[in-house]
Image (tube, rainbow, N blue to C red):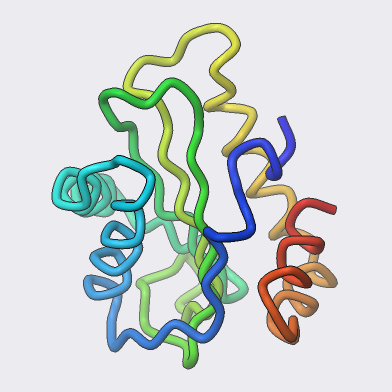
Length: 148
């Protein structure tokens, strides 16, 4: 699965202003409403997942993710933050790049949940891609980096 299979240009947010991790998760959840998802349910699922352990994967990147009832394929949303926030990441560095990944509640053949997680994690392990996302001038440029 490619990131472009779960992300669209209108789900890229640049210079999002949030003050902390909780507000980031709530804001990401709020931005799912236009896709027919229930933001309260998404926020609850994301917070529940964070209680299991931080999804801050290091080098300024977080991959908040959760399983959501009613989804039949992965849903992605990318946000570049206006300023880094503490996220309790594994390397203790603040986060300025976040990729929200929502997956179907049940993992079934063909719905791409595991492949989507792997594709996103792989993209952000690439330091050059992360640098290009940090300097992207617009959503289209960021999409090209993510989908590339």
